[in-house]
Length: 154
Image 1 (cartoon, rainbow, N blue to C red):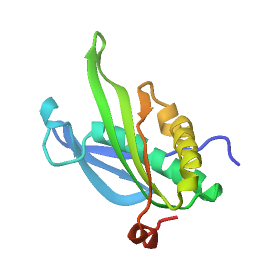
Image 2 (cartoon, rainbow, N blue to C red):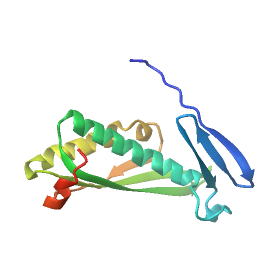
Image 3 (cartoon, one colour):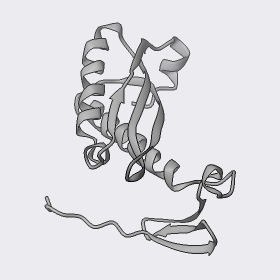
């Protein structure tokens, strides 16, 4: 396996505090703006939301990949992520990202293993490991209902 990978993204300004971002990996351009609290437009993606989305999407892909390798079947995984942005003497920065996974497992006996995999995903997600903000895991694990089992993702 390679020891380095490069990911390229381009952004273009369209007006003050706003623009579009594109990547060869995803042909759909995404419109963004500074958030309204920083004099940007409401209703579009913000760099702050991209940041939190990078952490939560990495967590989901890391966990689901580990679950697949570990043969842990689950009915669903929904993760709410909340980033805390704070101002200190040097300016604004993210100080914490809370991840609240809601995992529906197929069998009660898999609860401990599922929790260990959630914790491992939080520790090993490469985006979370690459930032200075602390990540905190607040999981909820329950056995899936029969209807959720029939719609299983793994």
